[in-house]
Length: 251
Image (cartoon, rainbow, N blue to C red; front, side, top):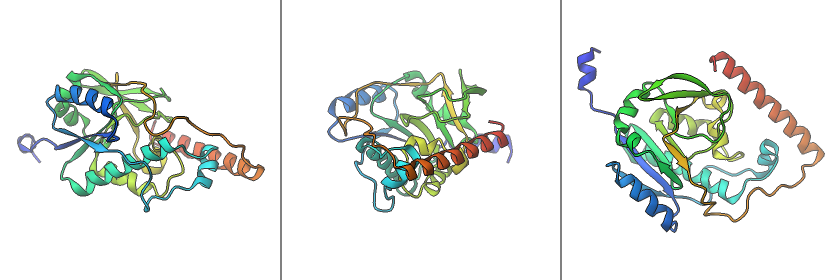
């Protein structure tokens, strides 16, 4: 394909959705004010509280994988992102998804230039716009007036990201059940085959409102001796797979 024909291609279509529970009035008002100022065509996506039947929650496996059961907030977050990926893939003709949660402060200039950001993504299928942990971060490339940062460990957080149709399909193929929080699953690049990259400095910041689903976090219950042994083995295998995949990919 020539450069002239590439220039003639229409820009990728981006589905902009904000995951939010219908009753989160204050959060929705703050996000609406920010997004309306960007000129983007966007909508709220009503959050879910529990995973759907095709995505069963396995509390026993969660105790092995994470050393604890998942909280109601983690289950709702998992279900909401899973449902949004399905809506993007099966109910839209968009090329990319911009997924946002409702507790963010946005850099308006970045989002006003979203088309340029999408064009600059190139072949990247999954690009974070925020991360909670600087897990083995290194600079990989320039990105507009920012950088692309690549992580060799788990960066955590699902506050904001860009995702192609291929990326969404990869996530859905690699996840068969709920046994970890959704951000934990999305960081498992050795399972879904997509490197963990982020725009840096981040164009969003998280606001600490607290959960709208639960009042408390992480109820810890002692593992049995057998569970501890299995958890030690599972975590060891996960670490070996992560290190192996990062080494092979130069991450």
